[in-house]
Length: 422
Image (cartoon, rainbow, N blue to C red; front, side):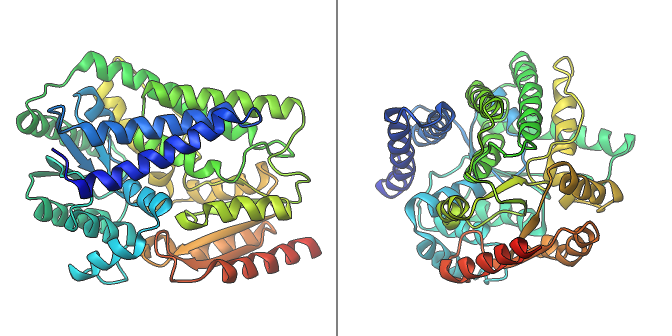
């Protein structure tokens, strides 16, 4: 049985998602895709909440993990960082879980989603996983977090080692890592890999990536039809439900809605004054604020090249495991934030600025993410060469004590004035 503490946390996320879903369904002007997104979110966390009562195996996993394999094995996934985000977004309990993380000895310089995650597990605020899965994607925080989660939950774990570069030898090595992980999961869960099911998931995942690209093309339109709040929804769709029917349903509805807005020449904000590029992830607690200030100042984020711009290429359902490995190299974050930062990734940044007709960029410099903050000056200098000014905002994805909403508003308003004077 799930303890009341665990149940209340997950239940709160589910209740909040259901409430928003019902509000969207009751409002004729609300996009259908919004309700479908929150339906997907509700289903994900309901499955997690009920997993142990239904005798199912829970595998907690860090970000950018191939959870397609878990779905194919009928194992219930728990995306650790996103669950921390959702607790902060819906419950506003950052202080509680971050404080619990501090009591474990985790210092503020460590990524707050990982500090909060460890704190949440130590409080018994999340269902206990039956196994912990983690990798070196995308940073040293992620690479070390699994060991602590295993210790807290007294569960077995598997570390998935991603090569830093692509070659025939490294691709073969990573394929072996995936095969070893499947053997580990089969042994610990008693569930066998369903290769036919994985093939179908890969087929849907290929379609899902195409939908991401179509949505990206529609966002190039002036005015852009995609709302600022949509960034988090796009991001978490792949994080939580890769290759799942509910993800396809949501993305197809979103694509069709955006296409209709483009035909009608309607923008997400009216009038559209400033088109921004978003670098890294805005704080969870500012999502509502960013939507509000966008409407107020006619500002819209038209592209997030580090997170929503998928590499070209297709997946082959007849080679499901090879396709899972291939997808790991195609995710936007892998191309620009892991391994050598090559000219291709830098050129993509410049291409985005030109193709999306960007007026300026905002870099959310998350203090707990050392490797991305190291690129601030490089990206700023690069974009300045193509006459795109960059606003850097020091922040934390989860912890709102780093700077206040009022301080961020002031910085953004000054940036908008600069853009207006150009």
